[in-house]
Image (cartoon, rainbow, N blue to C red; front, top):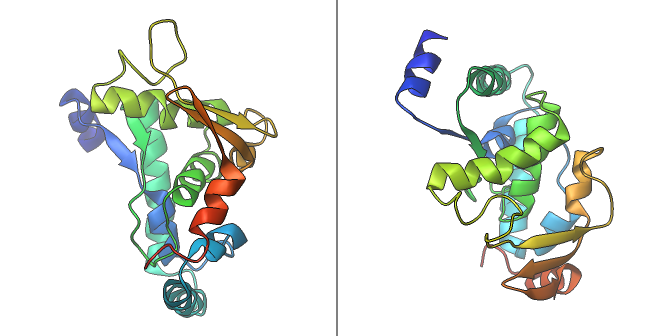
Length: 191
């Protein structure tokens, strides 16, 4: 806690990377079928081989324990007043890919860290804008700010996994059909 307080005092923000870290754990869930469909065949085969090897380990492994400790540390950091945000790199075991990895990162804030769905959404939106110094222009829906919006078929304030049910994304005032976008990258991620 002393080190965490030092980070907070120095205005250091932390980006949760549990979605990437989870790929090294024996307890990770089975892969999302839509994410698998987006991967190129070679990428999918590589990922599934790594997944099988990881899940075959006798748990709990050092990664399982470290994942749990990292999750606890994120919650303590936030609760002590630290700025926690969300972001994923397309790294790890090959299963963390753009979009899907961010959804999983937000879900893990709720599932592993113990945040409420609304806290997780704030961490993923406003906190990211604050960390980047863009909170005067983005991060919340307010008069005078730029806002990209999602239309979701569900209520992520009650069920965080509903963030995956995106119907339309509005970017710069233009609506994009999410299903068509996902179809356009099917089998291409990782080429």
